[in-house]
Image (tube, rainbow, N blue to C red; front, side, top):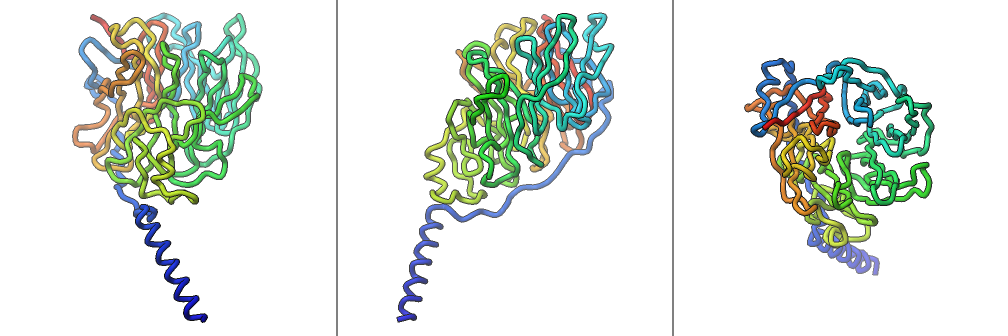
Length: 393
């Protein structure tokens, strides 16, 4: 009897294993290569060789801002730049109006991984890795004291948070990256976009299944929320694509089990109660895909008047650059063409930071902001430079 029972058990286990294999539940081994191009100096000659569409020009607006990331233009024209390495935010002033910043002053210090910023109704909001702070801007143009409005879940990975305020609901939106490359998160607030009132109340998960969406924003015409998500590493040179997602309340965007058009990720651990295919069928697919491992950081919709009219309502995305493929990609700024409020495709905008042979680079674009005059500001977190792109007919 024991032999029969044992044989029956082996048969059941074999059938389960076959069923699991047939359902695609085996986990594929990692794929890909680790390669980072050598960084070289951003000399005037190299900067002059940067590539832009006809009519556009670029120059340096500020220097010596170590690890410069997110950018925010205040109503008086001063520029805020977050410096996560030092946990500070610096305010830059262009005193003579020549497009270069002449004076700077710290406005926040000691904020671990200070990163995302948004300004709304005379209040500045700042996201660190474990908190969201707020400070009021006085009539004299000076910021008041900081107050904590929200605690965020701790993380040792993907710990750069970003912020936005909804144009229709006036709520604060906070992106929280995953803790890993591929795992089932124990805290549902990781790999998600959170939504809360401006004082940190009524907090809820707006969207989930997003590995690391740092660049996101509301379309200036439709008010719809769009974000660029990082695909997982070690899936090969060309997968999974970096994703442009239309972020909607209550939706699951699939990570870590799915990517792009609800495609099962065979490199991930399978979900516990479903096959990957079953899980992915209930998720929201990406709207557009971009080259894997390009690493999107900042994203900004163009709302200015300096660039040609066809740029209005389009988005710019800073692609920091790859480390998990060969040859490397990224080190650029791309434009997302929108038509009637919907994205149509990616177009190269600013390139040349990465050498043609892929062996060296002199910049990693990170943050973006549209200045009051319509020029585009771009931070470089590897050189501490801030660039300004202008257009002239």
